[in-house]
Image (cartoon, rainbow, N blue to C red):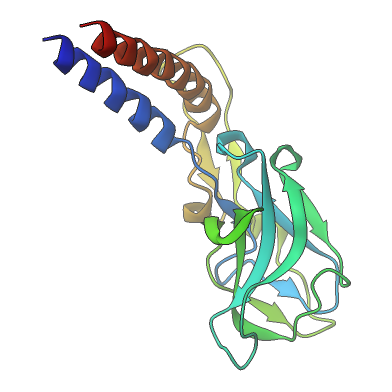
Length: 191
């Protein structure tokens, strides 16, 4: 019986940690591109990220365009939520098939999140309409029925339904789950 309780508590701790995630909001998809040799914006879901820092890489699926991911920011703080990328940081040629990767600063092959493929358009092209950028709307209340809605043409990239309320609840669940896992481990040692 004690073993079942310990296993259940440990699984609850792992499930709580697995729900927290990091995703890239912009760029990505057909409606959220960058413009070559210009200032562009990178944004991510900092409220749901379990990572404090990461390396920002740009990659391309076509090896004739770019043979390997290239770091454009060595260490980025998650709490920034977005970053202006200058033409000096990312001087890629206009092409399709680019992705942004947020990776472990100590191991760039450990990818935390990857954007949807996007295009870098030629210098002088128009930027995407602001209405194309997904945004989370809603209120953060104590009600368990609160929800946020995602608007924009690329809403799937945001995946933020109920993010602020769920995130607060997840922090509590993760903390309790972690305590339960430690308690379960001690319970197994003394059983």
